[in-house]
Image (cartoon, rainbow, N blue to C red):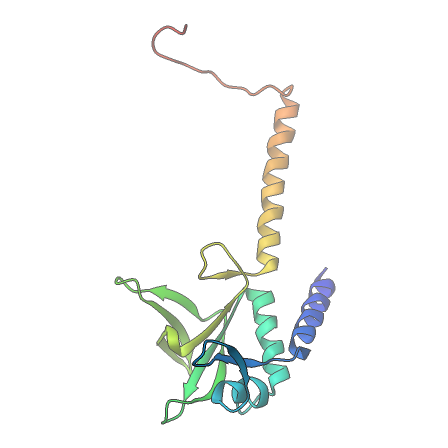
Amino acid sequence: AFDTVYACINVLSDDVAKLPFKTYKRNEQGAIEQIKDNDVHYVLRVRPNRAMSPFIFMKHLMTDVLRHGNFYALIAYDEKGQIKELLPLSPTETQPVWSQEGVLFYQTNHKGKNTLLFSDEVIHIRGMTNDGVTGISPIESIRTQLESNEVAGRYNRKMLDNGALPQGILTVTGNLN
């Protein structure tokens, strides 16, 4: 079973990493046009960071989403406010947190330090989600479904063992009409 999960994750992440990735913006007339001369295009199509090619970055992104339900990357800006690089963060050490004022932050361990990042400093790609914020991996979703099926099966077996009649005593105050 583990080989099958590994093979599925490998095939899916490879296939997504091979897809062409284009960047777009809305022009002043409201039309959408493809762009190739900005920092977003550069980090996504040319060099996401010093250690990864676009293919490796996208494969890493999909692997994290498939295994953990979430992919996080720190957006590193240069002194002009342009995106310099995208640095993947550990999905097991990063989680969304809400302030008392309802502002979304990300708590993570970056460079050995517990760090709180603003939401505009993080790219967060979610898998399936129950709350719109935190992703659930397909593996976790299937595990939960299997556990539910097991509990329901035990309940049904116990009921059949008891003659398929629910057991219990119902007590009410007053007269029933």
